[in-house]
Structures are given as structure tokens and as C-alpha cells.
Image 1 (cartoon, rainbow over the protein chains, first blue to last red):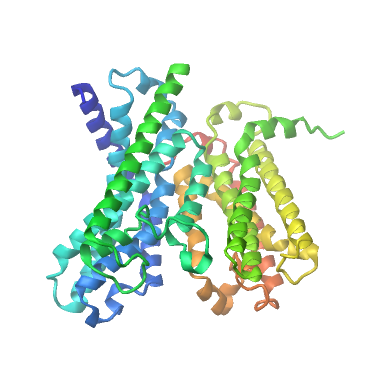
Image 2: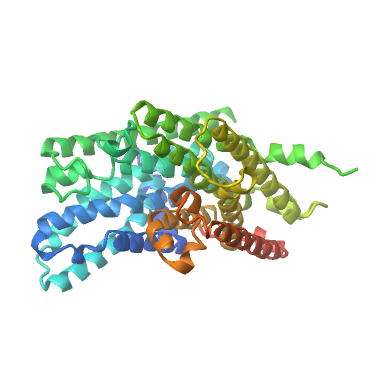
Length: 260
Length: 232
């Protein structure tokens, strides 16, 4: 990466982070989804003290991954088309380090920004749990589950939400993404009998990572028999897919610019 | 004679997406139903999935497109300088979106009746409220949110949030007396059980959509509001 590319990456990441983190709609949508998740799954502090943090924390991280990434994907979908709509894309194209560094910066900055409310939701629920338990010794483990289960899901979803709308119209991507999320991550293959990625290493919900790194949960996710090797492989596959889709989007944008 | 040249023009301006997405959605649900059938699923379960395609899937797709139509127009300033008012143009585009999605939905419903997979125990014409009520609701609310927030991502995010809320808490909606009237997917999740309240539920949704649409029409009176930017 040349100095210009590095600078454009850092500049874009910083600016995208600040734009995204100040969007009221991001806070509203993700807070609503956080409250919905807590209500639907009856909050970890109601799950029973006998379970203990070792079971409870990875399970809660996976449950947060059920619905919060839907909001993340929908919210981040306008980042690349927004440059066209704000009529700054041609201006950006004239800059010395146009292209890759800026796209990567957009991805990293806006994904880190959506991670802030997700982390806040996680932190609030962990704080509530610590008060309920009268003991906060599990907080380092809570940080680890967030880093290993929630962050990779956000970066996977963020990559597709940034890259795909370079090719697809925003509402089409949003609709397909919501459909994909239910089909590819939440559909229980034993119940519906439809081929799905929800019980494979390719699910970003984090079932393999949770069971591989943190041990078995108590039954919400199906792949509760994952090993450490499965968890590593799942993370590697998700990272590779995210990188591939970003590279493809970059190539497409370069090709589109060359055609103009 | 009524001038209908705008129909062709606005259809072209809408682009391929609103034309392609409704049949694509129906096709995807039909393919999933086919897979379920091949996997030996119960025929009632398959019929329920196909009904969900019309009542749960298509309205969300149309609502997201409606928000995109309102908040994604790249040349609002130009529209504000044309003899046809921008609010009229928006109305025409949303009407075309509704008409096409409705046509696809009626066609799919007729097909389901033909293959004996139609679950709604009502006369065919009345049963169309099964998909029409949520469709009108999502299009009206999607367009209004986009007008109010002037942001495609914010409006579609909130719209998806409402869709998720009603899907995830369907049991609460169905079990609570006053919430039952506001449940958007009452046909899919209770084809027989809530039959008595179903017409009132549909009427509430169509009525709400009408009120929201009137509010949106009033919001478009201030042309400058469109030109102002939304969120970053």
C-alpha cells in the first residue's frame, strides 16, 4: 500500500466513522433491534443462575447476532451509492489515490461505527447481568465473546453491505439481504428441509465460533458441537468471503470508471 | 382523452428493479416451496410459505422500493423546476409500483387457487386483502419515512425494524386484543383462528395506510424540503 493509498484509507475510515456514528437512525434502529432481542430471548439475567457465565455469555453473543446484523446490513447499504447521490464520486475519482484505499476505508470506518451501538447493547446487558449476579468477574469473558462472535459477524455483513450495492440497487440488496439472513442463518434445516447455510461453517451468526472457542451452549444454535478447528476455519472462510466481495466491488468500480 | 404518456415515461424512470422484484420474490418463494415439497414437507406448510410470500415478502420489497423511489431521486432540484409538480411525479411512480405489485400478487393468488394451495377461507376478491392491506401499509409508511427522514438507509432501516417486530412478536400481537387489529401478517399466521377479526384487522391497516398517505401528501407541499439533505 503506497503512502497515498494509506492516507486515503485512514481519511475515508475516519470520515465514514464520524458520519455513521452520528446518524440518529443508526442508533434508533439498532437500539430497537437490541430491545427486541432482549425481549424475545428473555434477557440473559433471566436464564437462570445455575447456567454460569461460561454457557451464558457465548449464547447471548450468538443471540445478539440473530437480528442486529439485519439492521447493520440495511443501514450500511447506502454508503457507496451515497457518493453518487451526493455527486462527489467523480470528484473522488480525480484524487491521486482514488479507489481501493477509499473503499477499504469506507468499509472499516462505517463498520466500526455500527459496532459502537452493538457494543453498547452488549455492554448494557452485561452490566445488568453483573448487577443481577452481584459479581463482575465474567466481564473479560464477555469482551472475548464480543470480539470473537459479534465483531466478525458485523465485518462480514459490512463487507457485503458496502460491496453489493456497488452493483445492485439499494432496495434490491436490502430485500435480498433480509431474505438471505433468514434463509442462510436462522432457518432450522431439520424443521424446513430446505438446503441452507445455517448449519454450516459459512454462517456469520457465530454458532461454530461459540461452540469451538467457548464450549457448548444450551441449545439455541444447532452447531453446538463445533471444535476449535471448526471455529478457526469458520472465521477464515468468513474473512476470505468478505475480502473477495470487497475486491470484486473494487474491480467493478474501477471497470465502471474506465468505461465512462 | 386522458394523457397516459406519463405511464410509459415514469415506468422507464422507475427502472427494472420495481418491475423485476415482485415476480422474482414470488419465484423465490415458489422455489423454496418446491424444495420443501421435494423434502416431503406437509402440503399445508408449503401453502403457508407461499401465502407468506405474498403477505410477508412482497409488501416489504415494495416498501423498500417506495422508500428508495422517494429518497433516491438524484435530480430533485430539476423536478422542482418542471411544470409537473414533483409530488405528482412521486405519486405516479408509487401508483405504478403498487399497480404492478398488485398485478403480480393477484396472478400468483389465482395460480395458488388453481393448484389448490390457497389457504384463505374467504371469497377470492375479499381474500386479496390478505396481501393488499400490508402492501398498501408498507408502501405508504416507507414513502412517508423517506420523506420525513430524507434518508434511504434510515427509512428502510426503520421499515425493516417494523417488519421484524411484527414477525418476531407475532404471538404477542395475536394474543393481545388491541394489538390484533394492527398485526400486518394476520392472514399467514392465523388463516382460520382469527377469522372473525380478520376483516376489521384488514380495514384498520388499509385505513392507517390511507391516513399515512394523506400525511405524506401534505408533507410534499413544501418542495424545498426535498432539496434539503438528509443524514450524512
